[in-house]
Image (cartoon, rainbow, N blue to C red; front, side, top):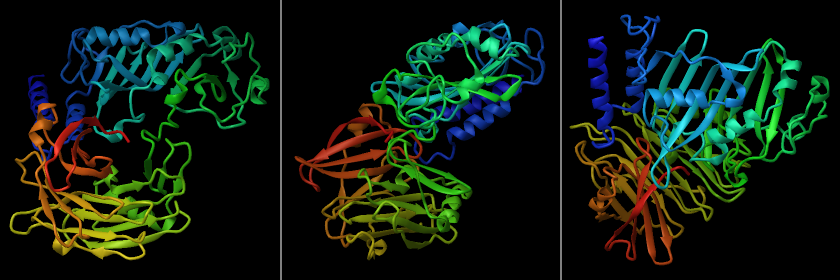
Length: 519
């Protein structure tokens, strides 16, 4: 047991350093979670305590892994409230003031009592609320085991994009309580499995039980299958699924009105307005919160998969999706071969451009941008080593990718390029990595298509006063009525960003505030 606590202490010290030390830390939240999972893996109930690597039975804290939980089965009408209360009793403020319910499964016995729950929650803190992290809970009344796992705090784990009234525990509980339990018990006497997934909804024309005008008093499965209780119109419809515990093929969809229709985002695969999804079958992208998805041609599947195989992922900076329907899209893909795949007409036609091979360096810094007027850039970089320097590349276009000009040889400084942005008039700003012990990047601008560069001094200390203790890369440069705005982010190792403004591009810049990146 002592060994476990020593390991946990070491992990928490490393995890705590993530928020206040250099962005070049080799530890990530995933390392922390993995080690925590290795540290607390329950194997057997020991009555009132631990048995070697056993199950924790303390009501004072909630441990990673398996815990004893003697919560008795309770009526379905209580929703997930009893389990939330149990969590609060074990660890104060675990939930926080705001959280989204992302996924729920409830096992309901023939008497109508909940005896098992699985749910996943995302927690939000601050003003405006920002994604702080989340956790997964499994509870089984028969085994008296409650399993708790934290999830990472990186933006890619946030399935919803922000605190959302449609995903509140209160709404979930109210809709659970409104289910016609007596009719369901008569129809499915062996028990129920009730499910909820954030933003899932029936397809247009699909049969459902429309709860917007109240619950039906009786249920006939054959009638439900042909839409006698309602059919979906394709709009936002908050949904619970109810399956027969004895026959998984018997399933009903109960649909309610969303609490806030304007907060309806799409489906759980999308957490921002513009997003990508990558699997072994290829890359898909959306620009409307997941309402519609378009696929990258199959010949580029290997390039997309290489990003995952090399553990560098496809970060937000490596994706460019314009706001305009039918507008340009671009993705900087590949393992050690940096390749830009792009389309000026939203996928009607595709082109590709190679930035070159990183050779032995890991391609883990990617930036892609393609504007509707044809201006665009692609930038990539690898690890810097003493004596060997680093591989880096930057190419620009002003004709929608018909031609590209490499300006890699003119790049200032010596370290890897980690951020870049181009405006409609061709002005380019870049950020370069700095030493491990530094918390801020170097910043340069060019007004002559990358032939010369001017260093920019950003007031980083002003951002630090607002608790943005480190910044990794430039996210965007835009023209405003009064001059310029530049946004710098912690991506891919954090969610906070700092904005700066200036009337003169190469003059004095002012700190403009802290924002939480989700889009």
